[in-house]
Length: 180
Ligand SMILES: O=P(O)(O)OC[C@@H](O)[C@H]1O[C@@H](OP(=O)(O)O)[C@@H](O)[C@@H](O)[C@@H]1O
Ligand SMILES: [Mg+2]
Ligand SMILES: [Zn+2]
Image (cartoon, rainbow, N blue to C red):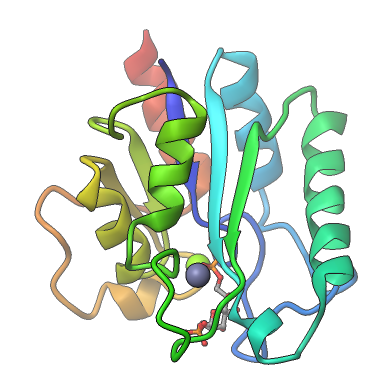
């Protein structure tokens, strides 16, 4: 199965140290929406795994998050693609959940949804270490983008085998070229 797992903030949309708290604040990174649509049209399944501690912090609520994801989905569908699954962790750093990246809980949910035993060889695209580590636990192939917090992430040692690209559009160019 051609499946990819994307981090959201800093990969699909612009991130903010003040959190992205509404659909109005949710702004796509240039090329990312079109890149997701290109994957869909090439037969890829697209999943999103996103930490949303802003919910636990009371910065926004589930209605706001749903509005952000409806906007994201609408923009991709307007380009002829779709996002097949969006999984979020609503918890805060102190909540002790098993789904907040770098823990792999969301990635297990994604594997189960697509009836896969693991995510061996599945590209996992993120802008932070925690995105890459969470995906590696299930065998994912790590891709770091320089958008969002990616430049900061680059300052530290990356997991072995991590491939670095400027942005999601460049990752998708690479994957679709390899598709042949
Ligand atoms: O990159 P993804 O996983 O899609 O989402 C990240 C966001 O939930 C927020 O995660 C926060 O980290 P803490 O949750 O405070 O550690 C901060 O990094 C915010 O700047 C960022 O917007
Ligand atoms: Mg991110
Ligand atoms: Zn969680």
